[in-house]
Length: 73
Image 1: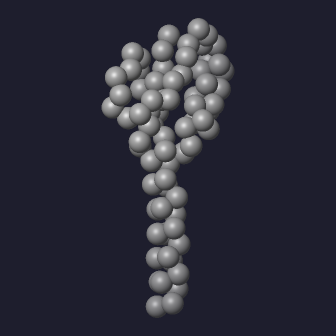
Image 2: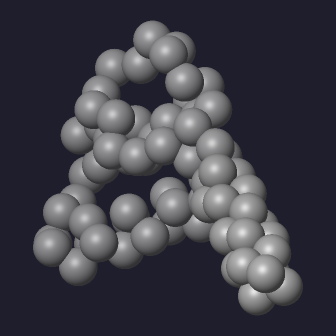
């Protein structure tokens, strides 16, 4: 029973960390690195609030889904 409680505690901590999401600047730099590696140039990545009108394609969400990263060419 004790092992079960420890496992449940660890899973709840992991779930909380996952729900927090990745910081936007970290995700933005990862996306930029992938685009640069593919030879893409002349683009911009912008961090906006989720649901905000933005001209471009949403390529990622961050900070627990509260913000989006928008790609513009």
